[in-house]
Image (cartoon, rainbow, N blue to C red; front, side, top):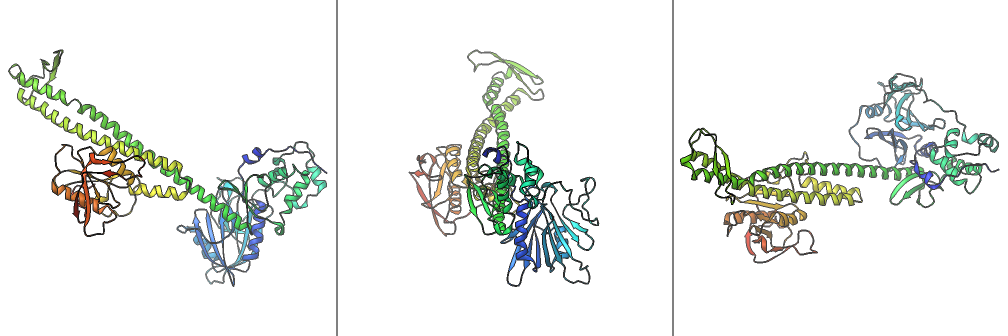
Length: 587
């Protein structure tokens, strides 16, 4: 007999999140565990994360690992090949080890049709602990998931991962010393006791949806209920129900992993016809399919977490650059007034005979302006006219010097901003967790992420893409940290009259000697120190003598199409130096 139903579209079936660990899955996992673990001895309990534990069980000829998780989204229990890296043991992990280590597993069962696993253990005889049989109860029910250790003689809770008192639940308390009771039960029918007649009585409406099935039949998850609807498009609803229920027999199980692109979206004990266009991977055991599914989930969540973390680091750095740039632009505006200071000083000198000590201001005609307007110049009444003029000349000299330094610093900030944009592009195009971890390592190397590792030497400390030094002659020396920084060093920082150095025909950092005064030569002590840095930060840094080329930056060209860090240069000369660093003013 066919039953009326409302067909669910593919889109409707896919809108709800797939739950891979449902009641049917637990039923199959219990069967697998019973075959492998009963009679085995618990050797070790290891904490994977705050809600997940790995248990090592030894049989006579083989060792098994089992995972139990009370995660609010990924609660589960199944066999695993090996445990993931663990964390520091919690009190609950130590409590489980104390009571269960060396104990023998006597029974593994599912309580009713709930996602509740019970593992009974006969503890090892001990003079200090009661040897009553104990049970691990794993309740895998979303945010209410919990792991409980119970004394089987009186169902008394010995300890639990999550303590639930009356302030957290009005239905039951889960606390040490309390008697264990099952969570509130829903009035649903046992799927194995439903025949065609009772099914017809249950669903006589013309508007049957997966939610109708889910709300009335025990053991059905939303995914299984949707599968019945999907299969019913080719056969009757009851026949589709029988097909799905047939997989409740562990002998009929056919574990599958459903993959959308490169992402596993579900692990199921059966082929899911609701996903006709997705890739299907078969497994010999349900535990194997679950391990593959949750391993993918773990990697995905780590990738998303890493992505968020790196984006946050980038945003923090961008905000810092924005604040620094804004402050420097304000300083630059003040520095651009340097000529005003000079003019005011010269006007005071030209009118010394008209100014007296004690004046707070003076009005003078500006001979340097075509309009010859009158300027009102503020004076320090405690200084004589000549001293007031010298004050303006000092402001002029300071502002002029600061103007050059501010422009240089703004160029550096522009280079750092370009590097951050490059990193942002890399982050947005990263396809794997490994790529994101490589970017994190770059962040650490370039000082964007601070670590607790002991810093090796002062010259390795730097904020941004360059190592910076001050030579014995007072010249600033910049050393690129990587190929991207080398490019920006040449394009953004270096001026035509700066000196450029690089280890001859050897991979290494670009080195720039800043020459703001456009001197015709660079003092030899500074050249040697810069050459030693170029040698040290090259692939030849273990050599005793390294050739280093140097030339003016205007003779260094990066041609279109060249890889990052590769340049062409002419008019070079060569120094042979021993790789070395110096610590004077390094930062």
